[in-house]
Image (cartoon, rainbow, N blue to C red; front, side):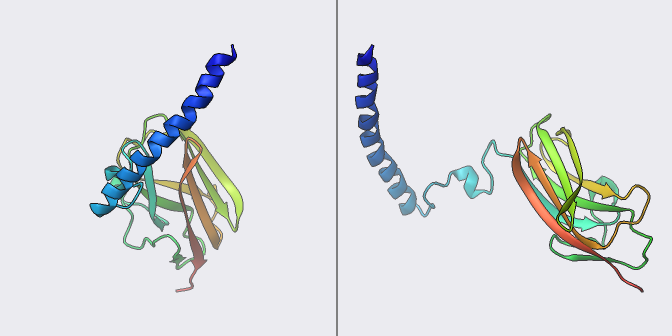
Length: 171
């Protein structure tokens, strides 16, 4: 029974020796064509054919029809201000996505000042491509000021992490 294992041990280094020149040749051909080594045509366009892609594009306290962010939305990393202490009952994270698979195990986790405050787990049901939003609410109370972070995972893989700081402005 040792013969197959011994043959396999010999075959692996031989395959490795054959693969190195082919990989080197492919890298050289790609470099000559102006392509970064190890980058597929789909990756040059921003995504791999089968990989899900999702980005948080804005945060706001309200939403418009069609899952579009309102005019007062701010980009991730920004500060979302509101004029009254009691006006913000929800915080929305607006997303764009593509290559998503129906039913994929998805989690959306929200944190305030680094402490997890809410996690939603569900099977992906927003379609393969498009836009949408996720939100966190304070159960009828006002959302407190602070630094909010949202993390979106699909099949355990972190696809997006973004944050916004919510402040009350006395207008």
